[in-house]
Image 1 (tube, one colour):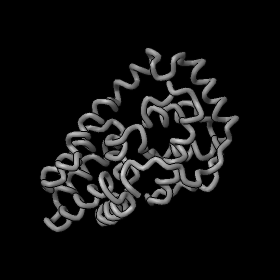
Image 2: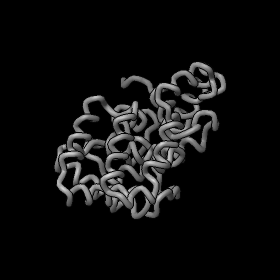
Image 3: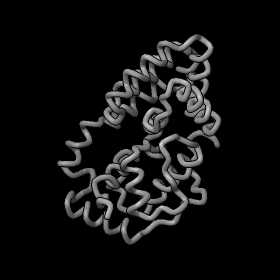
Length: 221
């Protein structure tokens, strides 16, 4: 699939009643959605707009001409992110910095495809390399995608994702700890479908929209 593709493909059915109920509850609590003062304060902690701006420069097509530099840039993005675990950041940094030249080239090429070429091939190449270092985590697989295209790509946070699947009855989506392209693509398309059905103030970017899903998630019965 070409990078930035947003076609909705066989997205799972969802419980729209639950989605609209969540929307009403959120808007009642935070009038104006993410433009609400309290949500603006929360948003400043995550700096998605700022991180997206950095990603446009650090992960541009041109940046991938220099393997060493672009891998340093990827480490910077991961390290600066408020959404990646503090435990994962140093492990990722040390793993990337400790790679031999061939593996570093493979990782950079995988990320290049993920962001600028055949996304599925890139995803699987990055996954294979991170798996060798026991770092095949959803957060590390998706954080650069989110920051590079925050209005179309998604960050997969396990708890939020599992709650969304349960609460909104997202059929044909089965979360598994090991990342897979099939799940990512369907989940991304589903998130973009869901946000098209609610007020635009709930989705200044996809990080905010999944934050809305997280905030309104009902505890399991």
